[in-house]
Image (cartoon, rainbow, N blue to C red; front, side):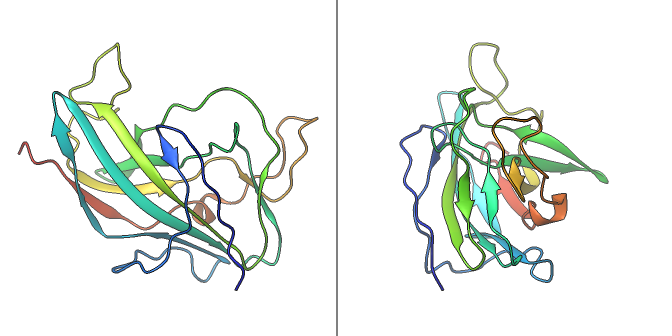
Length: 179
């Protein structure tokens, strides 16, 4: 299988080929995409009111089509959603510059690998990127916005968006060491 590797220099996202994951979270394997995280449990590192966390992931395309990812200079991080009761709510969205670059292409059979770097104030502050939820500890999932079946920078929306279930990873838990 061919693999697509990309490297980005950004504080919120550094992409690299990801191999050798241990406990993998698997999502949508019957839908043509495998969206994996490297583990099912993560622990925040907190110092001076800043929470840091790295969540490696891979996204394997088996749809029979090339997928296109909207990005700015290669930055296209997933977001974190937290389960609150029966709902999923936005918990953290990395800052990404507002530009439009040529789409990242993930051909059928290719794997896109990266790491979501969380760097957020806890509790929330106005002067710094923060978690959008009051209690950080809990059940989460990655959701990758801007994954399209086709891409045309001359129109908006830029293409047909891939279904949510094909852009959503399986649940995992984030521990908050303060509690």
